[in-house]
Amino acid sequence: MSRLLKRDLYPVEAGLEENQEAKVILTAINVEGSEVTQTFDFHITRPQIPEVPYLHYNGEVVEMNRSEDNPYLYLTEVSDSEEGYPMELSGKISTAASLDDAKLIWGAAEASNTASPY
Image (tube, rainbow, N blue to C red; front, side):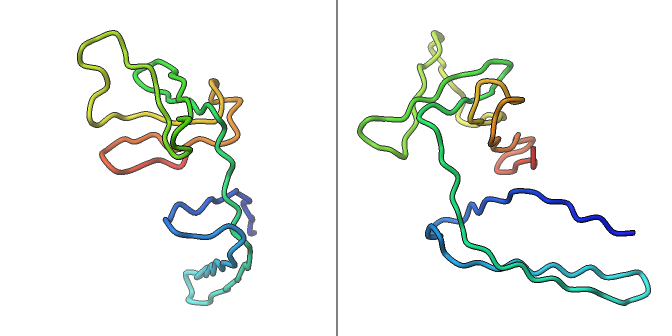
């Protein structure tokens, strides 16, 4: 019995152009050695990031506002402490203040430079 799981995948590699052709090749190998390969052709569609994404960090939800000077820079209000944010932190970034309402969630880092799928 086989199941096909459908998920929306978003490329994160730098330099990929909008509407560029791409291909995914999946091969399933049975324990007896037989295999099935499926090829999927698609066009890259980058997700639209809202004006205000949200940082879920240390039990708080922090608004990240798009900079007027640089559309690729998102700013937050620095916390009242003198330390501000640490150089490395573990959290999530989402398109809504509630993770349940978010269309996109960028992983929860458990270790430096890694992310979980949800």
